[in-house]
Image (tube, rainbow, N blue to C red; front, top):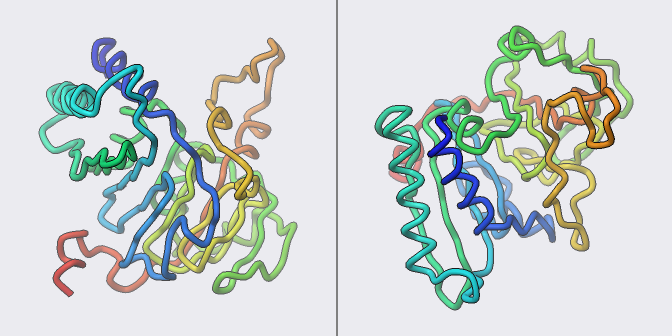
Amino acid sequence: MKKSSFAMAAAVSAALLLTGCSMLDQVIGVDSWKEWTPSRTSLQVYGDGTVTETIFDRLDQDWYTGDELQDMIARSMNEYNAENGAGSLNVTEYSDEGGEVRVKLVYKTPEDYVRYNNVVFFSGSMLEAEMEGYLFTGPFSSVEGSEIMAKDLDASEPLAHKEYSVVVSDGLHAVQVPGKIRYVSSNGTVINSHAAAPAGISADTETEGDTVYLTGDPGNGSEVSDRELDASLLYIIYEKDQDADLLPSELQKE
């Protein structure tokens, strides 16, 4: 992303200070990735590679009006698409009724989500993640349904399942995947069989400021190893459902 678009994206991020996820039973809704009804800022990954981000916040009329915010988001989307290809980012929903802002952004690929937000994120196969340099530092927990079955597992166990898919996140959002979660890194918690979040998220915890950037510097001038950085990431390893590759529009027709 060129500087102009990055500045616009940063302005949008500053305007929409993410409220984080709380009350986990309300974040995702029913235990089905096809019926996604988040009530807090969350991500959903589709089998076709699409990433949907739903952002919730409260409109601050002292700084901007709803029309100004909507215009800012539209201009940011248009600038990003002009530089990265039409349809790379779409704003499919915007509302600010009663001062409660809800924005839904659909990214064509995980890479678009990474570029637009300047964050760490990966979605793909286990092998692709390894080839991208993700270390699967662990430890991991095995998952059955919405329950943690075993903890402190070595990375060799989930890595043995090359047939699985994986999402790697910097831990800012709850994430829903199109299949049943089989393993989650030890810094994660399971919401239901299709969704997980950073373990620190609770009704009293905000996630703003907890994002991990792979800079090698934790902010105090000391060096951080690649493994330490990798261990701070949230890994969600899952088995795709048979119809996981359906597009969101196709799911709505079922």
